[in-house]
Image (cartoon, rainbow, N blue to C red; front, side):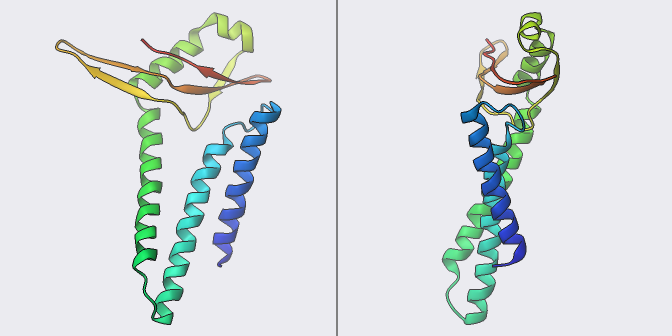
Length: 157
């Protein structure tokens, strides 16, 4: 196994474990690393399969299943990147962030909002009607405040 494969695998496992521990132990620092760790684990799987493909090709062995795995892992990495980008640039997500920044009740509860998490989670649904499109969703936003990170669920109707 190459060094980069071992490094990305170790980093991915560390981030997934840390992200889970943060949520279980209520540590409000670096909260959203679990999702990043999963993506890094997927990338390390891709590196491993590429190395396995090279080794099998040199040995003259069949590589169909390895190439299929490389194709699927590549598709998953590209899909994850696109979905994160698309979710961050959607109207429901933008409206939810603006609402949370302007909400004085939330500000009183958790303090000033400095930033939102890097990887949003949740769903976005667009309902087409005869007159206009109506977008709704249930995004989960990680809100970073002065001394606290709070996971806020916002329902847009």
